[in-house]
Image (cartoon, helix red, strand yellow):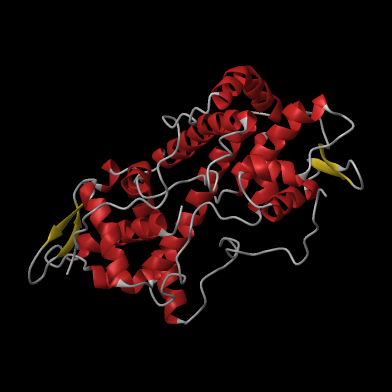
Length: 177
Length: 177
């Protein structure tokens, strides 16, 4: 999954937390992009998927922007995943398909479809255990400390952050002949 | 997850199914690459990860190749995932990190680490329910029909296959202003 899910959850979290404070001024894609630290065009594409899935609505014109289309407790994080997943593939398959002349490869490829289907279902079920209301509550609880840290110019904590993408080991050893 | 897991499971499945038939001639990375339909160099990199994780062993010299380092029932598919995952990231994070000056973004990013950790754990647990012996049995059960299909030049079934990667919807609508 590319960063689109992260961007979508970030956008929804911001709308859920910040939106109610200014009901007359929905959050714009520019404001979301500034917080996500990306281009508004990228954010609008993600929002378009969320809108198609019935999770957000657009208010057009002066003072327009994006609002939630449902209450946060009625938006599961699985629904957010599903709003985006039609353009994603969790498990990469054979780059060029398995060799069509190899019966073992054909059988393995079939087995993997079932395996990956089950694993993706488990992942989705995990996301389905939380709603946007959970995210909203968690953010609201940590916001005062984060405001203080931002005001002091402190760097964001990195301990819970992901491994840097694309890290490779320094040495590689060939196997086989 | 890129196609490396698929290539690793394909290789292990082939070694488990074909290896015991010719104990004196371990399977080579070239034979695996031919079935996976990719370059032997790519396969050797995947095998190197599996070897570091103690899942395969290399027999060098004439008649050398790759063999399983444990019995198939002692290789869970979660272990295969873990052998590769240090170079992978299941969920893409913020492309450039969230805006460090935005407290909401900082809180959302922290929340997502916990969310993604739980979802990845659920996915891993699902993979942990199966072993290479399951894959081996499934492939062996379907191999006679696959051999017939290959001999007849029939195309592999596509109904259980994945969505084509990178599919985009034809139209996009901007949201927000």
